[in-house]
Structures are given as C-alpha cells and as structure tokens.
Image 1 (cartoon, helix red, strand yellow):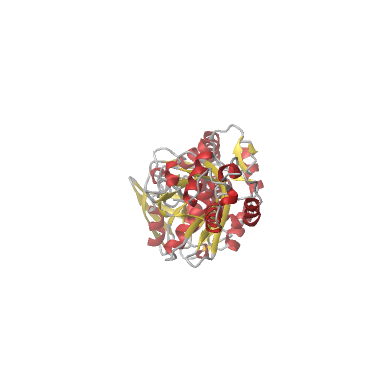
Image 2: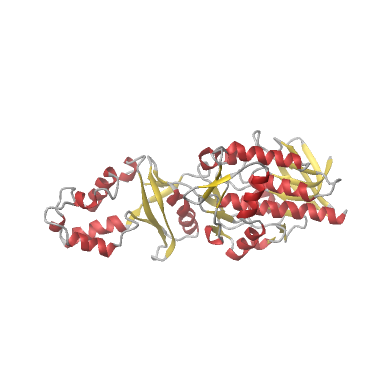
Length: 417
C-alpha cells in the first residue's frame, strides 16, 4: 500500500492537464501520481483532427456545448480561457495556428507534438506517470481514499477522476469511471449516449450509394411535433452506411438525446443552405422555356447527388422546369429544402468522438471541480455532463476543467499540510 497526496485517475487531455497544474501548485513535499489503464498514453490526442490534434477553437462559447447548463459551463471555461491555453502551449514549445474554420492546430500539423509537450510538462512538474494501471475501485474514508486496481493499491488525500466517458473505448474510455463515480454516491444523467457520431440510414436509402460525395448543407433536428431542436450548417458526407461530416457530428447528439427521451425526433436536410426557398421557386417560375431541372441546379450540387435528389423528387434531369405541375414543383422544392433522413441508428462509441451525458455539473463545485457529494474527489473532462461541437471545443473543456481540478486538489493538500 503506497501513499500519495493527489492521485489523478486517467491520463487523457483532462488528466494530463490536471496533473501538470497539480504539480505546479503543490508544495515541495507533495506527492502526485497520475495513472492510466492504457498501454499507450494519449490515444485520443493522437487521432484527433485527423492526426493533427485540433487543440482548441479561437472562439469558445457555452452555446457550443450540450449537457449541463450554459451558466455552469461558462464558469469553468472562464477560469481557463482559450488565450490561457494558447499561452500554456506556447510556453511548452507548441505554437498554434488558426485555420479558416477557427480551429487551432499545432504549426507542425502533428498531434505527437501536443502529446509530447504535455508529457514533458508532467515530468517537469514533478508528477509521476504510471501505466498501464487500471483502477477498479475507489473508497472514501474520513482521511482520504483507498484506490485499488490491477497490481496497484494506494491511499490518497485527494483524487481527480478524469476517466472519460465511453467514446473510443479502445483508448480506455469504456465507462468504468462512470461506474466508479456512481459507486461513490454520484448520479449520472438518465441518458448516456454517443456524441459527434456518424448516423446510419436505412439499407435502401440512395444516399448510401453516394459514398465519398460531400456538400455543404443545413441539417435540422426537429421533435416529433415539429419543434426545432438544433440546426447546423456545414459539410455533409455521404457514406456507405449513411451520413457523416461536421454537420452530422454536431447535430447527432441532439437527435440521439431526443430519441433517448422518447421523442420521435427527425433529421431534415436543406441541400441548398444559402438559398431562400421562396426565391428559388420564383427562379423556377421565371426560368427560360428550354431550361431543364438539371441545368437549373447544375453547379449547385455534385452531379451524382443532384441526379439522386431529382429522382427522389419524381422528376427527370431532362424535364423542362416550366413544364412541371404544381405538385411536381412542390415535390422538388420539398426534396431540396426539407429532405428527411431516415435515421435508423448511429455508429456507436467506437466511431464517436465524444460522449453525451455523465455526472451533472450541479453535483460539482465549479470553482474547484470538487464533488459536492464526496469531499476530496474532483472530476474533470468527459466524465462530466458536458460535450462540445466539432472544432476543438471538447479539448477546451478538458484543458479548462482539468486545470481547475488539478490546481484545486493540490492547493487543498498544501493548505492542510
């Protein structure tokens, strides 16, 4: 049985940031240990952003997140804003560049640069990193915690739980941390499901025959009674199983959350996101006598996608626009501006970039990320009921919540020593 002052469980983005700031905040005799069950540390960091690691976004707002209340999310984000994250990485030798989308990447375009800097910062902060050590149980006692796992047993004055959610389980995020939190007395949201996940369409959907074709669209999530739930505009990617791309990933959590709550929610595509439906109908009515449906839309959409949509609307590419009956014109407009996707499922946690749901922020003291339920326990990262959009927002939550949790845990040990 070894003894540590602060034990950080999980060495992903939030855990590494918590360990770094715990080390920087602690006194000279404080022992801080971070453990992780993975054989290779930082799997999610290394695969993020196509292997380039989208570190954060130049503008991060509470509105970019789902889950807990925006006011709660705002308080944590303000404690460690984007500017502070950029300064942190610059001090560790990682310069970031802003791309047109607002995403911030390392100038090296290599995720390894980010991970190596974090690991070096952990070492310089005097924190020991040990893996693979899978934590299986945490018990709270009057003077701290007993933590046990594979060939590991320790007492700890403070524990920072950064075990992630369930997304990308091969990285070690398999939901075990959520079970530990519940075992200690925390609740978790009624629904926990994939977020930022591709969606599966019915086997006969012609979109599945268009694998590799992408187009900018507006994707709307509506409740069963037609109420607007969410709306995003970004590229949609047709795949052999259904749809993916930034717009689908962003919208997916809202569709899945609504359905998990028993709502027969739907996903609807506007294939011409920058075009007003009324104005487009006027262009149909005013088209020259020789204009065809294909010529009217050529260049607005990829050719194969255009042919599929015309077929779905019941018109032929060579049909003359001015010859369309009122019903066929309405069918064409509905297909272009109100095309329902028959979503029958999602690609699951293996292909999800984040987890929706977790420990509610209402059970956490936001100024320290310390549990209101279990004194001495801090929580950070994806284990919390917070999930962001595509674009570095989930990393920003990890950096901010991890920094707050780690620094507060170490400060508490120091003040009591």
